[in-house]
Length: 339
Image (cartoon, rainbow, N blue to C red):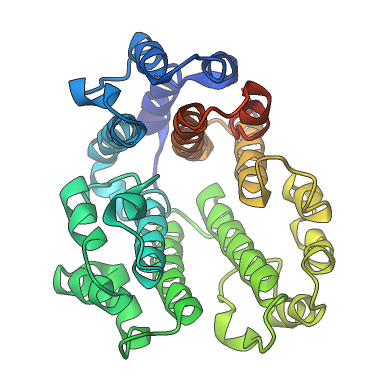
């Protein structure tokens, strides 16, 4: 049986260093980027001197601070790292998906890296090298050459000069969820970690159904991920068949009954930070509640990891918003952090 007491204690300690909603709201009113940098340093962010030169430099420095905290968590996890694939490899999945999209869009390397958090398996130098690849197929080939499991999982879909982007993203997600499920099973099929992974699969299926509901020729069966609990292939196909984003979301909402996610999908257009921001906030809130009712489970650890992701997203949002002169009101509406 996997024990979490030590990691939970350390996650709670690290949580005290998170910025929190009140600080972020104050940061949204900062007059310029040097003021943002000064406030972040005051709260413990270790920023390079170059961070004050531009928004991209400040964002990079802030991402490095988040990555350092994630590495600390990884070192403490020790032999439980494989069990916690859902934390560390989920960041890798997000990074690889963004890099593949950036390659397809021919975006500059700097933009492809924006918002990505490095991990022990994909450190900053690796992300930079991947961001410099000329095509999505080249990104996957390099990952596979390094022996990264997501690279191997995506290789069959990365064929031709212009592979199908949605198919490639689904292959990446399939590789991730299989490893996440395998890791979670080590902690027990009745445990919090296993339920969390299955919910994460449902969330990914919901996102895919919403995208496909707007596709003229959807291939629903090819994009559905097995392993979830609330969205079987039949419901997935029914949501896609609505051909309308909001209708598909409302059809999917009951699949998340018993969690705050049901309300998020029931009103998909009612969230200033966007659907994904609202989903992240809802999952964090549910985990925080579970932390109080089941403190010996990995809920405190999962909550910290997601709060760290939310903070990284919020800091990025504020840096670029302030650099572009966005009004504080609009910046406040886009924040993910709840407390």
